[in-house]
View 1 (cartoon, rainbow over the protein chains, first blue to last red):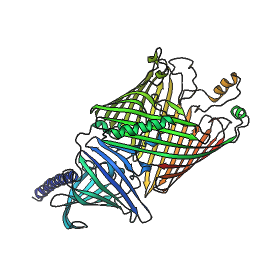
View 2 (spheres, rainbow over the protein chains, first blue to last red):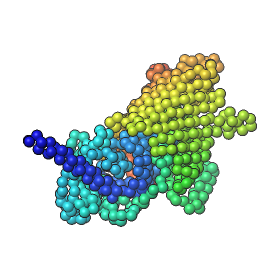
View 3 (cartoon, chains in turn yellow, red):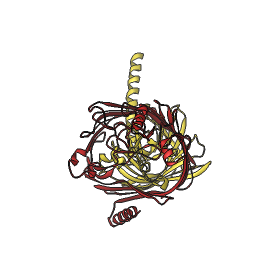
View 4 (tube, each protein chain N blue to C red):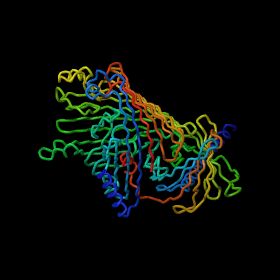
Length: 250
Length: 387
């Protein structure tokens, strides 16, 4: 009798866990679609502030096509203008037209992006559902600087492979519409080392989206990099050929 | 000077007149002063002839890059004007081409351009399509070719590039100019973190070079490997200003290159390193080359080439955002133990203005292993304003 109860409980647990994962994945995908369309062009500014050094600012143009890749180009400051990055899956290339060589250099997508608290992958791959297995961790009310007290669904994700930038992520989504409000990033050692907060909610590319994304490093006390999206348009016409090495160096 | 001014004004006027979807324009203005000293130039025929043991030069330059983007086409112009303190003016057109995108899976490039080929940091054995030159610091540099390239992208993980280089034919349009055409074929495919490229470069009676390259990212370390076999080739790699006939046609020459590089960011400090090994079975040994010049009655003359068969290249760099960047590179010819060092320090504290000092130092086990003037040290101080 006890065995039967145990089996029923185990199966129920498995079914509930599977259902939980399905819900979590659906919520995460919805949050991703709120942050960015599948295919887009955007202009953003990346500002890094630190208590120990002067602020830095960069402006980028970014093209993204789902399953094809991301192409980024620095447009400000003049010192870095024209430098381009191409990301395909976990592969990253950099091309500097001022180097007078037609070749792009392949880099790892894991490193920090241009001295900011964002990783290369944070900047160029807007999707987490490809890289993390997620579950619903519970409900929590957080204090949001722009929205006040907000009830959130908390989602936890563990890396599917060792190639991902973070070992674990934790995401707070507004319960009412799954708008992403906050994220925690954990190092391979399991230590929390970055906190991301989303704000500046505006109508952009056909829906309400966060346009200010601030990433705080807990390693470097007081260092925050903030991406502000100035312009975003849906671009379903971007050809796959735009996301190739030959296009990167063109 | 006139050429640069004319092309710049013409381009800006034309691009301003055209209703561009996107127009990108940027460039640098640079000033540089170089002091060079040849430690053991005495006895070197070049030094003896010209009395060169050290010199000082100064120059200024302006370099510009213009790009006009449309959905279905683009135009790019990249050029440089340099003026020396002696009043010598030189103009260099790096790239000037038009690209068309008639269908999403095809790009057509016409004009002078560089083609992205190979995977190494310093050596690209598979790249025989881009012509090379040896610059003032003895480093190999692409100079771009005039011709046509077609890039096919049937899907996001596979592409094919075909290239036609007519650079040499333009000098000989009277007869058999087509025999100077150089053809290139490159295929690139992704399998997760692995990228594989296969290539073939062919020019009648000159080059037949199939090659294979791969790169893979393991825990942030990017490993690259590249190899090529050259048949029917009267030149050797890296390319030289001089050409000897190969003793026998269809004798294969092998080129193998392997390396690893890493870019790591710790706080706001970016560290980079690259190590690369290169083997070539082509070329002449130093003693054979010396014999060649002695036979011509010119004494033991040494020319700027990367002769030898085993090379090692290393580079380490560090940049503190908005403060300082340094690079230290070394190129070793393992065959004769000659070494070329570069060290550079750049101050980045002033917005859009780089203040740079570069030291280049050549040394070796014998008197003439690298460079026109062996055992030399060269110091360049420069300022570059970006706009």
